[in-house]
Amino acid sequence: MKETELLKENGGQIPAELNKMGTMPVGKLLFSMSVPAMFSMLINALYNIVDSVFVGMIGEPALTAVSLVFPVQMLMISVAVGTGVGLSSLISRRLGEKKQAEADSAADHGLILFVISAMVFTVFGLFFSRAFMNAFTANPVVADYGTSYCFIVTVFSVFLFLSVAGEKIMQGTGNMMLPMIANLTGAITNIVLDPILIFGLFGLPRMEVAGAAVATVIGQVFGMALNLFFLLAFKHHVHISLSKFRFNASTVKNIYSVGLPSIIMQAIGSVMLVGLNSILIAFSEAAVAVLGIYYKLQSFVFMPVFGLNQGTMPIMGYNYGARNKERLMRAFWLALITALVIMGLGMALFQIFPTQFMMMFNASQEMMSIGVRALRLISLCFLPAAVGIICSTLFQAVGHGMLSLLVSLLRQLILILPMAYVLSRVGGVESVWYAFPLAEIFALIASIIFCRNIYRKEIQPLEDSRS
Image 1 (cartoon, one colour):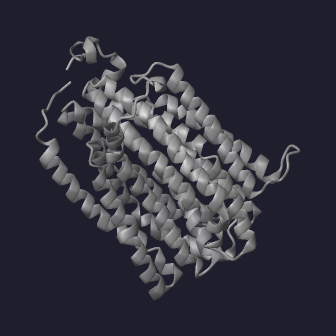
Image 2: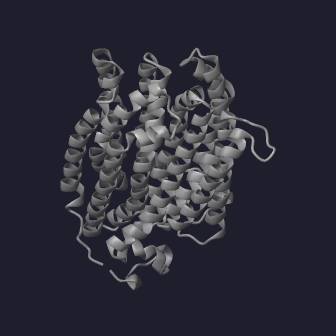
Image 3: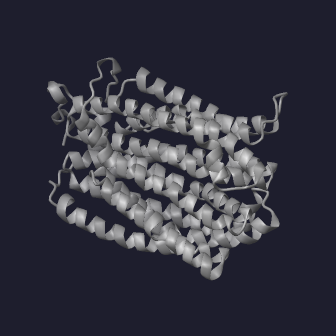
């Protein structure tokens, strides 16, 4: 398929930059689109870890408070990224189908939907931060730390949402570099400000846990400003025109047909954390802090794979829309192999260095005794999780977000919470961690079955167009 044969809607020629998703060698394309996103996600994981390392220096109550608020942050990110997944998938598919006007409309609708979503969390932060913390702890120090942190990150969540909006619109067109620069800037800002605001350096007041939240929000402001600047000031293959915005229910439906399952799929993780925190708090606050540490550490392994997901999905979505089976499946297999390598390395690190990881967070003796075993056991889920993530990328790229939702329900709600509860009753806190690999194995089986069905019914019949 030559570039001169790809015509833009209304008769113009499609720019070569867009054609790369249908013409560039898949390996090179996957590398060029995934590495910036993977690097960006790694930086985000790094500042999550740095944030907790500094908070851990305040003391175990501060680390416990941030761990209890973490599900709320996960829920915000779930809504933002899930909506972005639906938006990015729709944009890439419409561009692959040469439907420029519909791709533009999707981008306009996405921005509006992100602002509405942020308003919901602002209301939650204003009126329910204290009630949320009181539901999980009677320790007034932990409750005060958590309330201030929760209030700040939720009330000012619009900066997070608009940053993700700009990022996902650009990624849907195949542009991965500019979002990486914006996110990198926000992450570095957060890392630099964390110790300054937490400990009151350079003459500033010591804000402790609230300082970590303020640093996070300021980092999001910088990320949002750059993402929106890049989106509006540079030429892309979608055009934002909110002055001409006209609400279209069909566009919203198409965004959420993939985005809503993705939101629920990721939000289930937040529900899971709330449930696990409820189980663990019955044993000790240290156990809750250990779970929070694990989630910060595992992000350093999972985030690059999610970056790979971001780079892979537009390629698969575009080529699915263009009916190019060979390129679609080549992207899938290359992404799967890459994810397995990343997760395998991560599992090895968790098996070899759990003590060193716990020491990074100024862990108490109780946290150390719980955490070393926990990190080794939970990391056994990494390899099956790699397969599940890439299979979910395929489901979303071809418009089957509900299958991703079903797999996540198995992993993070239907199986893991009942398993964790039963295991906690049978073997105490040390047995809870077995629930992670057990749930992941069942989810792996379901993912493989769904992938086989989609391939046989929808991908195999596609024309095998070669570039």
